[in-house]
Structure formats: C-alpha cells, structure tokens
Amino acid sequence: MNNLHIVRSPSTGLARRTYRGKQWNVIVQQDETSTCELLIFKTEAKAQKVCTAIGNLSAPLVHYVEKLKISQ
Image (cartoon, rainbow, N blue to C red; front, side):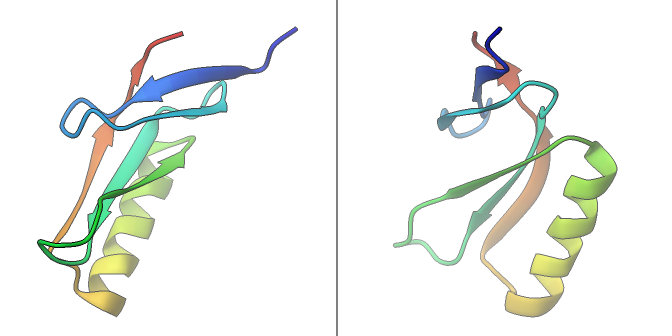
C-alpha cells in the first residue's frame, strides 16, 4: 500500500510528494529574489505555530498558511 500522495499549493503551484494525512503548508520566501519554500504539516495548528515562529525569528518577506490540494 502506497502511503504517499502528491500535494500542490493553490497559491504558488509548487508540488511535492509527502505522506498521506499531511495537507497543510507554510509558504516561506525570504525576499523577492529567493525561491519559495513549501513546508508541509499534518495539522493546521502545527502549520500556524511554525508560521508564527518563522515570522518572529527571521522576518521573511512572505510567510502564510494554506490548505494543500491533493493531486494523487
């Protein structure tokens, strides 16, 4: 049984393979020239907690939470 699926960020189009059950992400971009990073979590609460911590520690240009689209 395959316990992986492909998820996609609705706002950026970034896609990754991850474990089933993980459907929340944090998008992080340090500045206008850097690439976006897609951090994936199982719960919205965990994603919100990480997003807040990232904002407090590194003050990136962009950081927000969204629910991923499951592609497969």
